[in-house]
Length: 262
Ligand SMILES: O=C(O)c1ccccc1NCC(=O)[C@H](O)[C@H](O)COP(=O)(O)O
Image (cartoon, rainbow, N blue to C red; front, side):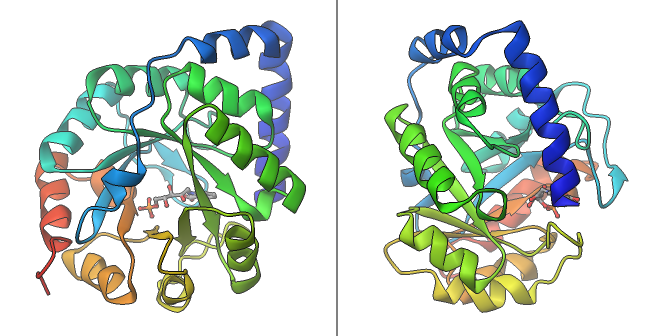
């Protein structure tokens, strides 16, 4: 799955680059609104919530129509989320950079560009659209690419959520000096969600990094489980976008992550 996803992403990037060359995107990134630092938002005591705008997915198909992504993000903010994640991949997730621009202009939280970033063009695009944080998936990048994209992300003032799925990817993320390390319970090759993956890997994330537990989180008990392993944040998509009251659903997960709640 990951390889075919990446092939589509590369085609789409090449098409966008033919329409708007890298130089123009760099210029736009240089004059984008100032970055909202994501690290302090994720380092609050307890488990912070990263709430995701996600219309559909390869594993589940259509999840929610989300006609107004900014309204959804406002509900997340009102419910106490620390960061909003916007899936911008179009083919499989139905997202776009326009969603990110809309969300960023209507909430005061840091915003994550959740996509499959494979080169400079997408990092510059992310900043140009106002992103404060980008996703870098270790399985999609070699060490050189990971280091280069992380360095570029920081040059532009942003941080990266560096995503891993097994011990060797975690070692690579740590060696690349990732400060925010996401452990995805979803295996991006098989799409299976195994909560045992963050249970196993989050405790291995060094204490000077921020560990984020990702995918398959829908209940207060799931958030408490993430907290027990040492996660500083939980990234949640499906259970929030499919809720009839996303603000209340956000608040329930945020409350479960407050320090002292067990
Ligand atoms: O969600 C998928 O099916 C998926 C498939 C292939 C690559 C990535 C995928 N999802 C991206 C994510 O990491 C999730 O959107 C995110 O962790 C939230 O997960 P969930 O709460 O289970 O929607």
